[in-house]
Amino acid sequence: MVTGWYAGRMVRRASLLVLASLLLAPAARAAETRLALGGNAPEGGPDHFFVPFEVPAGTREIAIVHKSLTQGNTLDFGLLDPAGYRGWGGGTSEDTVVGEQAASRAYVPGPIPAGTWKVVVGKAFVGASPAAYQLEVILRDAPTLPAQPERAKYTEVAALKRERRWWAGDLHAHSKESTDASPALEDMVTFARGRGLDFVEISDHNTVTQLDWFAGVQARHPDILVLPGIEFTTYAGHANAIGATRWVDHKIGQPGVTADGAARAFAEQGAVFSINHPVLDLGALCIGCAWKQPIDPKLLGGVEIATIGLKQGGSFFSNAAIDYWDKLCAQGNHLAALGGSDDHSGGTRQNERFASPIGDPTTMVLADELSAKALVDGIRKGRTVVKLQGPTDPMVELTSGDSVVGDTVKARSAILTARVTKGQGTQVRFVVDGEADEVVEVTGDPFTITKVVPIAPGGEHRARAEALVDASRRTVTSHL
Image (tube, rainbow, N blue to C red; front, side):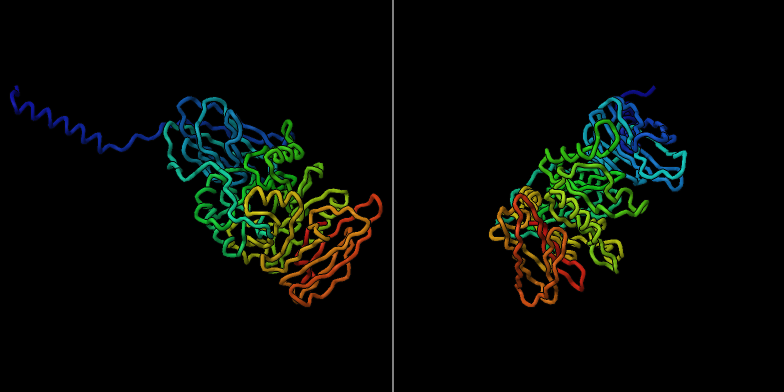
């Protein structure tokens, strides 16, 4: 029997050994529940279907492993919580992780409510049936992703500059929150600033998570505006919601989900809805790139007449896209001419034939200040000019008296004036009601030409001006 101070010392030593063993033991791993939910996509029916699963109280992170298993097929994946949208990863094969303070790109972090969640599966391209897919849901009681404190709620910033002028920017560029794109927002803004742009719209596919990173980047780059937007991406057309800050359902064919309804929902946010690359039909190489969705053109605010600049012979400042726009305008719709690079790499792949750096093309917007509200308002009014190869291309300003592009002149005749700057060695022409005038050589800087357009009682004519280089369009104005 051990007694006295020695026994007490032994007890204390044992306690210290137990404490040391606890401190040296590895941290307890998050408890996981794994649900195998894979199968075959239903044949026929809508383009999207849902795979429900139950999330118990106390869950702090959800991971989803997903993959299309049938060679040649493309399936997209997204996630809904009991209240709705939690992200859209599209066709990426990356695992999805959604937690309380962090999430994978294109997904929304936040509370993990108990109840029925759903994996969204989109049948982007199904060439072989059955369209098998792998799907495993992992429910964790502790997070594995590090917290992302740099995320912040989007708040529109005050005007960066206050003056009425033409502002240069790109209205179609993708950050890594589009899972088919790679650049960080910081790199995109740095590249755009280096090209001399005043703004760049971050138009990621069917998500708004890019907005979480705006505040920090905007604070570090106070001279270039980061403009919010969404590329509304469907399997029969892509559209640009310029200025949008709230997600709108893109799953056309689900109850109540239509292109018209989406356009109205974006309009309620104050955004302009424009068709992207309307005639770019590349089949499976670009699913849904050509616009084939039925839509009331009166709900549109513009058409992307230029997508991708001149790189190794590739040019999508195409006659077909301009004809598409012109046909809609001929029906009495006043739609802005818009351009965007559709850049997915922050400018790093600009030498590839079908890639284009931010700013190729550039859209010039006449606005009273450099702010999201003013730019969207300028676009809505049709006060735009599109330059194919960037801000240094020739500028063409079309006026009639005090009226500018986008305005409607009510008169028995209108005197059009096209003023060209930075255009020596190019040609300029008017296009009235889709019919092009003879080209005029630009011999000065600035250089102007005029034209009188008689207007029949009750009639309406549309006029634009174009600068050409080597007989190819380089700059196109919206209509007046």
